[in-house]
Image (tube, rainbow, N blue to C red; front, side, top):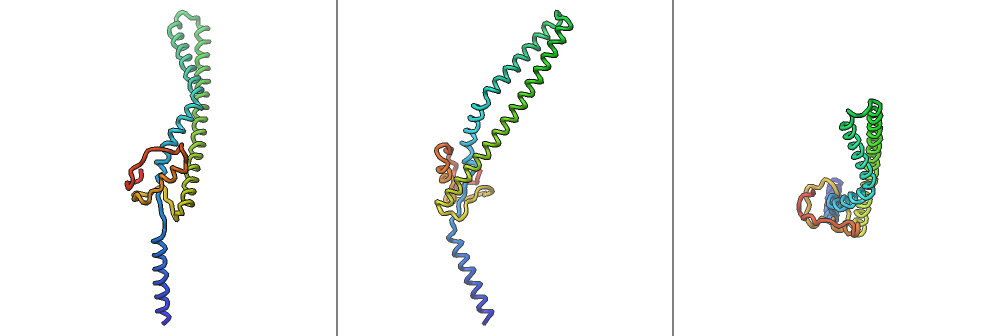
Length: 177
């Protein structure tokens, strides 16, 4: 009798778990698709923010090249003191330009990393919002090899990202890119 009760109880639990599993709402979000327009926005923003410093650095590089050309063409007619002074000036300017280039590269990388973190946070906040509003039990993002169109929630998340979140329409029912 006890054995029969346990079997019935376990059967009931298994059937109720299967029924609940059938009611799960699961979706998939292709984060890579959402990142494409954000990457373009980031590139343009970085270009605007750092282009003046890059141009200034390029100008210094051209100025150094002109000085080196002048040194090579006029070295024979220059005194040893003038030649030495010009060589030191060129070396000093090269060191200064290298330091500025290193600082620029560091600033660019720092800003880029900050913006990537901000973009990722924005995307995952939109994913959570869609999950709550659409009553998803689970929204998957990475590592999904294949999903059908009925599971794709990418466009819904894209809509929550606003006008800036646009992008190309990825084919549905295909492997995630």
